Length: 560
Image 1 (cartoon, rainbow, N blue to C red):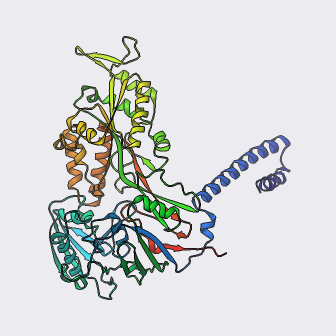
Image 2 (cartoon, helix red, strand yellow):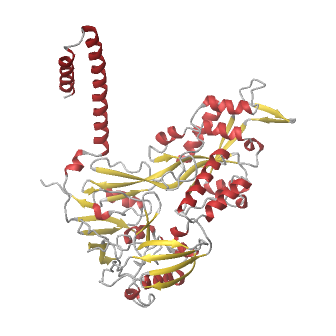
Image 3 (tube, rainbow, N blue to C red):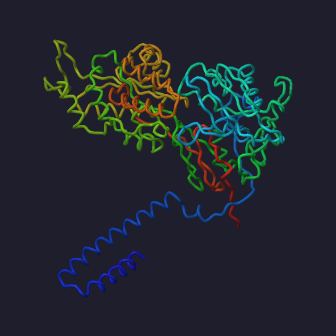
């Protein structure tokens, strides 16, 4: 086909050039031929890329109605989403219950049951308007009474370990304004207040007295699927229902097998007993089931980094921090250690967040740049032993670094080894300090380290003071970093309420972080949703809801 295209192009330009002078025509023909060849190759490359990202087979399969999807969860102690304490059970209950507010793909609060909202001038009181066209699966209307009842259930009945209990830590007061509006008072104006409303709502009329109603194992919600049956230690069954949210699911039924652990989940998926397997950031490389398996990735809030000990004079020098940042091989680590399951980070703010700032100082991998930073601070190999040293105000220093990591975490171990190799390449004397996790944390708390490789599962609620604020030194600010300007920026970001103010505050904060380098950000890890070849449609898992758009999924089984 490529040769045929080039022949037609060439022939067309030969005809056009017949009336020109021979040399001029020849030169123009050669130029146009080359241009058309380049354009053709570019088109073919674009088509190949499109075919890789959008498989032709997937496009040709029409939407199918019906079928049974097989999932897994742990044995449930309760099927009330506000009292439940198990994350795997919560994932399944999201098929039955919709949240008051949802998070979109950019981790931004978006309307669902609540259709809009506004803060007062002070920023701590929110007026929330509800949709009036949402119905429970028993046919009754969802109203403000249900929202108030749900808040009461979390505040007064839910155990401290319930999945959504922490939401009430931000809410001070709440009251009904009308059948479809409520007022919520927060403890303070905080940029993360809306994230406290990412909770399921339950029916006041259905549950009644929650302690005596006997509805604990009989969920009734407002989602795309409704409860059918539950057999402890065996299975739960759901069936599709008419939804208030504009669409109805294509899949008829969901069977949730009760499993005991992650290994059982993996075995069930590889044996074809279930259709979906969720692999978290620590499960990289666990599944080797390549046949008829589809992969869908989503960036999580698990953040890996390298921390400095600012109580050491060596790291109070910004040029030393910048030099180490310049030889941290982030892209290489992403491919070789994370196996591509992540995204390179510049700050602790997730690159997928709606207030992420891309225009910050960046430190691309460059040994020569690292050496320039060190030379600017007078680091030289004065005694020609291969190790850099310097003398400042009669203080003699050697570029000697120890890297702390915990031995149970293979990713951190690999990062420590690679970083150590790169540091030696620019003249550092390096030792690796691998410790069991309990010793690792003790050394962090005691400040007994130079560098450490660490990671945090950051909350979906944005607040970075725990790792950067001076008041957290000796607590969760293990680096012992202190900076008044950073504290002020953290305060502004914390208290911002309006969308434009939040974006500006976090933009300024991210720029300051990359200028100061209290940490070297490495990556945010991905999780992967694996599905059997039966599952089709627009599968788009989100970190806080892997079944967010399950109404767009469908099942297709090829006939013999």
